[in-house]
Amino acid sequence: MIRTVTLPVIGLALGMLPALMAGPAQAQDATARTVTDDRGVSVQVPARPQRIAAISYLAADVALAVGVMPVATTYMTAGREPDYLLGLTAGMKKIGQRAKPNLELLAETGPDLIVAMRRYTQGNAAQLDKIAPYLAYNMELYSESFTEVEQLATLFGQPQRGQELNDAFRRRLEDYAARAPKDRHPRFQIMWAGNTPFTFHTENMAAWIATRLGGENIAGPMVQGGRFGMEMSLEAMLEKDPEVIFVYDSGPERPHQANPIWNRLSAVKAGRVHYVGDEWVEPNGPVARELILRQAAHFLYPDLFPAVDIKAEAATLIPASVRK
Image 1 (cartoon, rainbow, N blue to C red):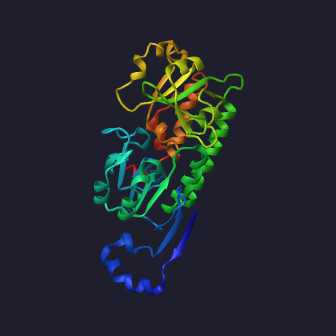
Image 2 (image 1 turned 180 degrees about the horizontal axis):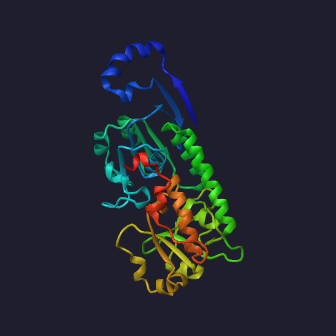
Image 3 (image 1 turned 45 degrees about the horizontal axis):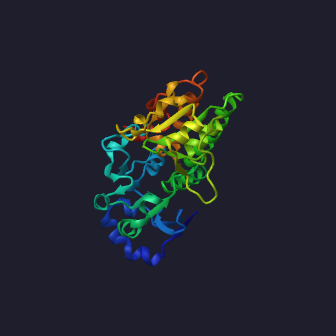
């Protein structure tokens, strides 16, 4: 929920000189918004933030899609700029890995708004609040994506663009689902690499997209009050025997491949294991979810949907104004 608050006239008068001295980023807008984030906390933030810091890629995804360039972001894997964001994160200050943001580096960027993944920042919320207004979103489930995109696009000064992005994704998803075969339901799994892979339930955005396309998620839905994913042993994977596996590609270490059970899986024997990019890990943004939809359709039904050129497709979603 977003509410705009106009500052008192007296406050404006007293604050005019410092604002002018501080520069245009603070002086150009005399209003603030109150936003209730996924913690249930009401946070007063600038109406038009100029220096956005992203802890996790969601805010960078939304910002770039609406034509705004953040000043800072965390990374998923050190030294890797995600293709789905056209490598534009290279121009943003790196403030650590998304699960362990470096607050000193963050403070050095001088942000006027921090947008963060809730579960990675709850423990240091007080320190973040001292740096800049801090909003925490879950960034986990498909049901949250549309609100996250709408709220952030509004904060970034582009509410109409946010609505357009949500509407366009809904239409394209329905179109792809209508084109998917009704007599084929490939079993699939979305997982992190590991000795006991962490596997995602159907409510996760990427898994939900694949399910809407007719796939059958071997992890099934979340239990009431449960987590968005669970650990699944290779023995349990063999019992479910996925036909298509999507693995979050977070580096060269792939311990699951050393387990002899791995080569017995149908997906492995058929060459249908796909090591996917950061958009699958950060699926709730407007660019990420669009690219996941196109990739998932191709990987589930390669005879019906074409292969995807990630950068070419991303360039159709990120305006030229921030691609210079």
